[in-house]
Every structure is written in C-alpha cells, then in structure tokens.
Image (cartoon, rainbow, N blue to C red; front, side, top):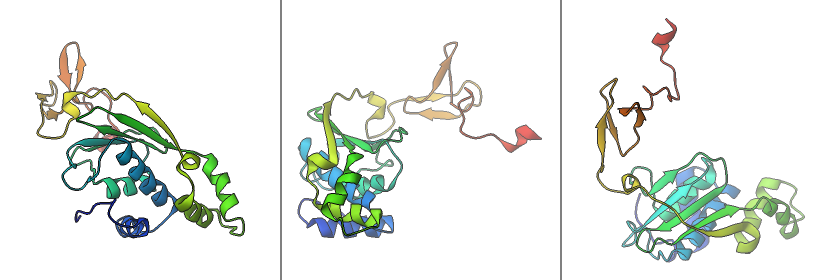
Length: 204
C-alpha cells in the first residue's frame, strides 16, 4: 500500500484508490471516504499516511464497504493497531488524536438515503442515486458528529505488546490484556467458554 496524502489529491482520485483496493465503487465507499476526511480534519491530522500516521486511532463500528474506504483514506489498519474494530453494526467511526486526546464520533445518517432523491430524482436505482448524491451532499446532511471521550487501556496502544500472560488451562500466550480471569487465574477466551467456534472433536 503506497503512501499518499488524501488532502493533496482530488476527491475523485481518492475514490479511484478506494475502488482499486475495495474492488468496486459504491455509496459505502463514498461515505467512508468523506467520513474519513472529516474525522481527520476534526482531530487535526494533516498527513495520515506520513508524519502523522502514529498520532491517531480510528474505531470502526461496522464491517461493511465504508470500513475499507476508511482504512484506505486514513492508512489505519488492524495490523498496525491504529484501527480498532467494534462489532456494533452501526455505520460510524470515532477518530482519536493520541497527542491531544481530542476525539469525534461520526455516524452516517439514515435520512441521507431519502435526501439523495432531492439531488437526482431522475435516477431510479437507489444505489447509483446515493453514490452520486453522497459525493456532493453537505456534511450536515450526511453525518451526525459528536465530540466524545475515549478511555484507552495502555494495552490497546500501537507498538509491542505491553502485557503477556499464559492461559492457566491450555498454556497459550495471551497478548494485550485480552485474558479473562476466573477465580483470580488468567484464561484465554477459548478456555473461558467465550469461543466463536466449536471444535469438531467435541462432537466425536
């Protein structure tokens, strides 16, 4: 992923980069791109892929098209620990400046879908109508913005793991404070009964 400054290229060029990395251009990509630009501006990040890349975190609340655009525009990723995924199912993201602690949560307005009809009433296909309208719609019609406080655990910060413990049952290494304590003993989430899967061997 080559570095670029999203504030130094045209919005159409930015959408082309989003399209290339996501696989297609859709309304979600437009929403994600505009949400990202707004979020970065609100917390004072001017060069997210360059000198400012370690100065902020992005918390995304949905695993949809917009999240790919947010990753593309901001350069934040799960692997760098600069993007945090919270499975809320809400088209929203929070941007946090790690130096100033200034944070804003931006949520896409559902009313924007209806508003899009005012911009392109002649287009019957909702997906195309929204894609085009979201490019030019005022920010206030697209998003609900709220300044928030994000309380961070040191283990959630980028960089090397600040904590490692051994699961009391299976002996696996658990990083970044994700262990669960039962009777004062640390367990991985699998051994604590919080697994997202079942082992086939358990069914014989």
